[in-house]
Each structure stands twice: as structure tokens, then as C-alpha cells.
Image (cartoon, rainbow, N blue to C red; front, side, top):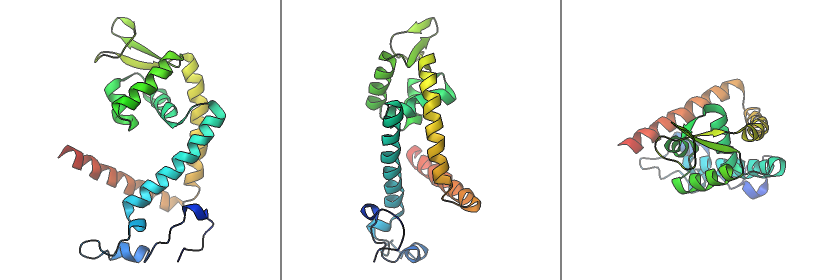
Amino acid sequence: MPSKTNRNKDTQVPALGGAANWMDPGEKGERITHTDAPSYLILKLSTILSRRFNRRYVELIGFGIPEVRLMGMLYDYEPLKFKQIVKYSMMDQAQASRTLAVLIRDGYISLHGPNGAATRFTARVSAKLTAKGRKVSERAMDIAREHQMQILEQLSREERKSFHTVLHRLLDWVDSKEES
């Protein structure tokens, strides 16, 4: 039976057993239902937040999450090499390449090599925001911070600390599995 919450009915799926099943999942996880599995809930939350934020970005600045993510990374950490952009943007090489091509073509990002401006990525070429890209990135960062605050406001200070710790522990675990 769905819990009584103010969540949108379209996103509600009954959690059979709820937190009790996480506390005692069974020897092989047999008490965890598909819709109450940690990976399902993390993906569901991420998908819903991405859709909502993407609509807002498109409405306000004309870009979606891939463009905002790339420009945001450059805003915080420029210059970046293509390998770094792929690794930290969580995009595959093809998507990163397509997104960068559009942002370069439209004058939001420029490429720089050891001898100055470059026309394509090589191992020694890095991407940077142009003045136009920095201006849009600043607006995108304002929107992103507003969204992040909306998320954090749903949690108490102690929940924020615990959630942050747990997310980083899981990310470290996933990273260690990728390396083995």
C-alpha cells in the first residue's frame, strides 16, 4: 500500500516492507523488492531530479543538462583535457564529443594547445570557457545552486551529513570495483 506522502502519484510505487527489509534483507537479499532496492531508488531519484532540472535549464538558458554539466565543470576546474571531461562529466566519449562540438561551434568553449588556439582535441589540448560561456555558466550555476538548496532543505543538518557520508562511501565502493 503506498505511503501517505505529498509525492506525485506518478512517481509513487508501493515499498513492500520498507526500511525493515533493508535492516534484515535476508541471506541473499530476498526480502528486498525491485522498487525498494537501493540502486532502484537512487536511479529513480536521479532521473526525476534530472528531468525537472533539465526543463528549468532549457526554459531559462536554452541548454540542457549535458551542456550545463560540461560548462559547469569548466567553470569550476578549467582548463580540462578531453579525458578529464569524459571522466568527470559521466558522459561517454561520443556524447561528450557531440556536446563539446556544439558548445565550441556556438562560441561558449574554446580549445587551447601548447602553441595557442587549437581546432580539435588532442592529448595536449585543453578546453576553456569563452567570455560568452562564462556568462551563461554563471547563470546556470545560480540555477543549479537554487536546485541544490531545494534538495538540501528537505533534509535536517544531521541527515545532510549522513547522506553525504553514505553517498561518498558508495561512490568509493563503486570506484574500487571499477578498478578491480
